[in-house]
Image (cartoon, rainbow, N blue to C red; front, side):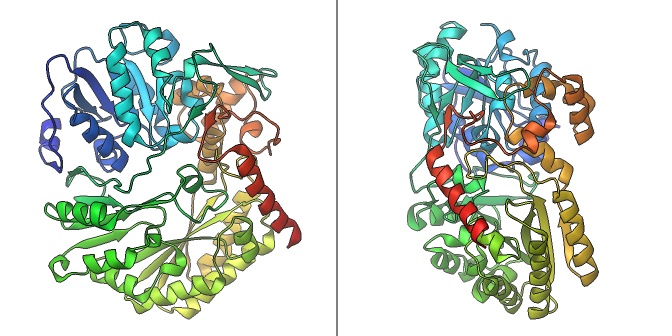
Amino acid sequence: MSAAIFSQEKLLFTPKTPKHNAIPLIFAFPNEYTVGITSLGYQIVWSTLAMREDVDISRLFTDIHEPLPRSADILGFSVSWELDYVHILNLLESLSIPIFSQHRTDCHPLVFGGGPVLTANPEPFADFFDVILLGDGENLLDSFIDIYQQVRNADRKTKLITLAQTPGIYIPSLYTVEYHSNDGAIAAIQPVSSEVPPVVQKQTYRGNILSASTVVTPKAAWESIFMVEVVRSCPEMCRFCLASYLTLPFRTASLEASLIPAIERGLQVTNRLGLLGASVTQHPEFPDLLAYINQSKYNDVRLSIASVRTNTVTPELAKTLAQRDTKSLTIAVESGSEKVRRIINKKLAQADIIQAAINAKIGGLSALKLYGMVGIPGEENTDLDATVEMMLAMKKAAPGLKLTLGCSTFVPKSHTPFQWFGVNKQAEKRLQYLQKNLKPKGIDFRPESYNWSVIQALLSRGDRRLSRLLILTRNFGDSLGSYKRAFKELKGEIPDLDFYVYTDWSYEQILPWQHLQGPLPQSTLLKHLKEAMEIKDSW
């Protein structure tokens, strides 16, 4: 079965033939092949390693795998979704590798992890990894392999201490965490010796050649799609947004050196094109990119675009998408309340939002999806009414356009100004209020699971004490009830659920990721938070 699925891949790079004594490396995605192969990050890391002749790489998914080495030097995981930790633990066990790094010896491979989940806050999962790569892989990945080659034959401790000298390479076991009490806040995070840097700096790639698919396959979740990264990060800097703050600065791919060559290469093997990025239409040359795709030779191309900034939804953009088999467009508005949008730094006027619906309809799209959020710090019940009024105004302005409001609960994220806030306990009721007031009016309201938001917040703000809890929930199942059951079992040994999820943390408190430096220092995040609270208090 594995061979049949892998044989359908069209590679857009040329793998090197591994030389004698190449490093045997397993690169895993902790989910099924169809999910993993759709991850652009996974594709890029795999192809980067496969183009090194000193690495002999095998891919591993939860359902299929390439032939695996009998004894791997390195086992890597690309982690895109928090709850995939269950699959990581299962895969470790299937390979006879101890789950906890402290139980591994020189005869076990080094287990490394990377990806957005671990870059944001690796601490709940830190005890499972020997090495965590923080940030962009473009430079970091080659540095990791180069340094490993130098100490390949050394003992495990020497390997880890040597790797820890490289910026962006985080070795959790080389840092001790002290707590005020078993169920209290963190008292200190210290390196175990002077050889270990006290702070690990996330690595940022600053080039203008961004990522593009290295493989196209009909077995991907987005069938036969070729993906191109148009921008990285987002210039808007909404104060809750991890995708913006964690990946700063905002970078754009060069039209001539990156985007056009990549698209030409990809459209030779498929007619499905996906433009990726948190704010694709804010690329300074986006109109030129659209004009390039609009050439008659690409008339049969099916085009998908990730979420776009609301005030860049023009009739021309909508028309291009409609002509290329896209029925809808997605915009993030967060709230219908101007006050809430100001608090989070969402620079959008109500007129922009309504105009986006009008332009989508003029251009020939049949649907518009909006992202909303409840429980944002400073939000009140009247702000929910403003969201209902905004949706009804859009419906009236663009009759016949199907409107969908997907709505999540605010979850505090590390390295953002709102990381100190807890989840609003009224959020579930607020989702129900919007449902009650929108669904009967013909608005398709799709709330994200409140229980999932609670689990997300737990993992987002978690520290190392959660590793024991995660082992328990793995056996209990991944429902919120399982987490509550595990907390009950560990009562008095770790903080309770409220501490991690609902409590507003003190600005003086040591955060679980305090020793991991993101793009902006804490002083800047506090400044942005203060600006938000001044708006809330003055409204």
